[in-house]
Image (tube, rainbow, N blue to C red; front, side, top):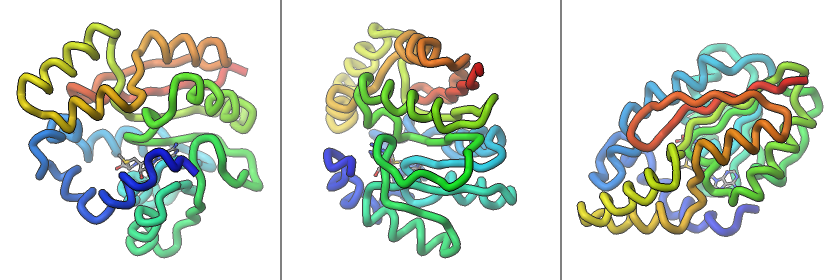
Amino acid sequence: MASEFNKLFDDWSKTYDDTVAGTDPEYRAVFAHYEDILQSVADRADGLILEFGVGTGNLTERILSQGKELIGYEPSVEMRKIAKQKLPGLHLFEGDFLEFPKPDRVPDTVVSTYAFHHLTDEDKKTAITRFHELLSPGGKIVFADTVFANKEAKEKMIQDSLDNNYDRLAQDLQTEYYTTIPVLTEIFGELGFESAFTRKNDFVWLIEAVKKS
Ligand SMILES: C[S@@+](CC[C@H](N)C(=O)[O-])C[C@H]1O[C@@H](n2cnc3c(N)ncnc32)[C@H](O)[C@@H]1O
């Protein structure tokens, strides 16, 4: 599952929590206000919650600490090991946005942080279509991820990264599937969601999409 990125995240798993704490200068701005970003997603989730790209379980931990009910999906075996060590009681499955064991009840919220950009825009559509089918009436998607206001903003960020000699970050921005707010707004609208975007740092936006019917 999600084999394209599994090796990257298996390798990154042991140092991932250091990176989000700001130890890697290239990624410091990406993870600025990380705790606040997770909190804003957790606060908006309710009912039965599905989380995709659990990683080391940081968002998961916040949601569970609020006494909410969550099922997690994560494609990287090494990430799953760390999440399970932190949260032994977690209902965690091997899975990704496109291929995952279906819950036996109707979910109310789909959450994810720093993960949706691993899908091409075409695959994002497929995932959102599936979530529309699965979610309860009025159910919602709450994501936080790197998105750009438009193509020019993305190009500028790549150029700024190169100017700062942040070559890993520049390559990441050029090769993963970071999209723009107009593209996501159109996809959500076409697929039956009302969406809203709130900026959280220079890279990350909070994305809320409510199922219209
Ligand atoms: C940058 S980490 C984010 C982890 C955590 N959500 C957080 O906010 O710290 C991205 C995670 O998404 C997972 N991932 C990669 N491709 C995915 C996909 N197609 N579907 C679901 N998760 C994916 C990775 O294995 C990794 O654990």
